[in-house]
Length: 378
Ligand SMILES: Cc1cc2nc3c(=O)[nH]c(=O)nc-3n(C[C@H](O)[C@H](O)[C@H](O)COP(=O)(O)OP(=O)(O)OC[C@H]3O[C@@H](n4cnc5c(N)ncnc54)[C@H](O)[C@@H]3O)c2cc1C
Ligand code: FES
Image (cartoon, rainbow, N blue to C red; front, side, top):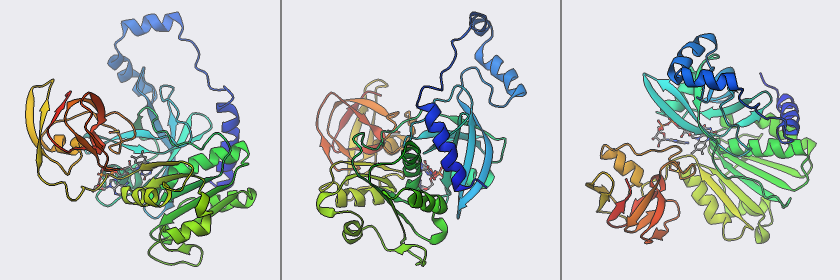
């Protein structure tokens, strides 16, 4: 069991070393460079893997070194990263990959950085979910996972201004990473963290959050359940009245929201018009937009293919349904892996509804749908 005090202590120590330049990699010696030129990567990895499962010449890998249940259907895994893993800043995400039933699957998770090139991820199993159910139910100590580049821009404002953190369900994970970093640094600004879970059993980090709030008077924590009431928590959904009780709604501070697409859309509608700034990242795919019926013609300039796709679907989903395999990562408009050029036509951002008729521009396939016929650089 990783006690909350332990996390707080480890994180304070880590913050002091990692962000004061204590994590430099040594220059590659000449002999190693010559050896690298002679032995192909796959041969090196084949033999290296037999010595240590995360040894690899270039592949960023991490081994599961601890696991514990963090809430109902939710596990925290501690991963020891090899030297190729680029460690994330607080609030960033990593693509974590595993082989499940003979197929490679990768999904985004929001880690906390721990000492000794370790990160912890907390994963909630979603019904029918391939990766989340695998990590929660089957991942064991010793398993090796692939790790992608860190991505995402969620960050607390640098000016020490007050912040409001809004988390729906597993959207708590980047918030706890931000909060751990901030409290390790010695919190001075006012921070209000409000999180919503359906049932009391789904609430993660409760003891740690309460310990942090007791230790830091400028931190306020509000945990609410939306379905089953419980005397330990508030009850109710995110709405204008709750917001007004948490912060002065007339002058909302910087607000950051994370959770499902619906939660983020709701938080955006409530906060964005009044907040000093608003950042948000959605963890689940946007729902199909109503009122965008019919099909559009997409010409793929590089492959010379033309196909018809539904106008109410993100282009990534529509292209996959047509049998194509465009590069992608998070599928939520955050990592930029699916960015592709558009040379004609109008697209609609499925998160905000904004239309972009600009002819020569780049778009993210996962969060844009065709608002008319398009020519894409694919
Ligand atoms: C930037 C980013 C950071 C993330 N960080 C975390 C994290 O720290 N912890 C965590 O538990 N999850 C996190 N997620 C969600 C995670 O990446 C996966 O989407 C989630 O684990 C489900 O993957 P799956 O393979 O099990 O489901 P899939 O097999 O991909 O999908 C199964 C079904 O579940 C639905 N679904 C997919 N994702 C979600 C979701 N998040 N909530 C509800 N339904 C969903 C799908 O629409 C589908 O119907 C993050 C997502 C993003 C984009
Ligand atoms: S897949 Fe990450 S931005 Fe589209």
